[in-house]
Length: 274
Image: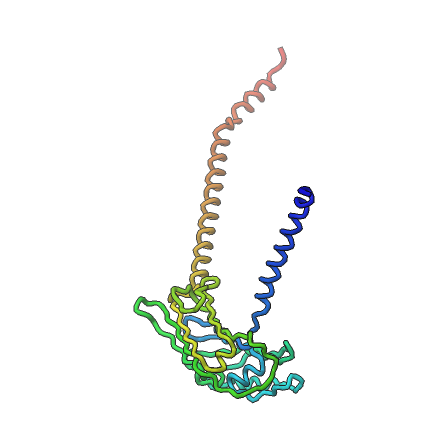
């Protein structure tokens, strides 16, 4: 009986491990984002914004005039017109489908993030970028109420989320996200249930970052490494050349003069045998 229990123990452990893994994966894959706004900010205030959202979410949150019927034709030009403005340019628009809902994926560029609220889909936010007392950069985004309309039954289960993410150009010094997690040193996310966003519960986003960009630091470090490698190579070449010259001089000292020996030999060869 004991032997059988020992044999079953590894199987029980594997079953428990599989159960824990399944629960973890289920929790990960169940996080459904109906609206995602990713801001890739640069030091000069320009930015690239990626919006990934379902059509019902755009209608409910931003009042977009897009068809809710998943079988209806969705024109990319209508999506482009929604985000194109005098302060923003639409770089690309793609479409997809999930859970019987249409999704749009838009890439927008803006020369000054502080003017982005002049575009209708981003008018619910007020954007601020300033220099702090310590010389660092402070980014603030206050997301206010949604200005959409009722969408009816579109398949939402109540677990859907809204996410706002910042991809900052330098290391984050401080931020006010609920999780406090900073990915890769410069990515911060704020999440909210879709239902709360529809009700208009505000989101206050704040992040403090270094003034010098990560890219600039990386390029500077790379340049220093190139200089260091070049200097090392030059020193190695100089040492090799110096050693070669020393070896050549030593070899010259070991070689005896051959002129007198040859003359004496010739004289002996010229004498008659005796």
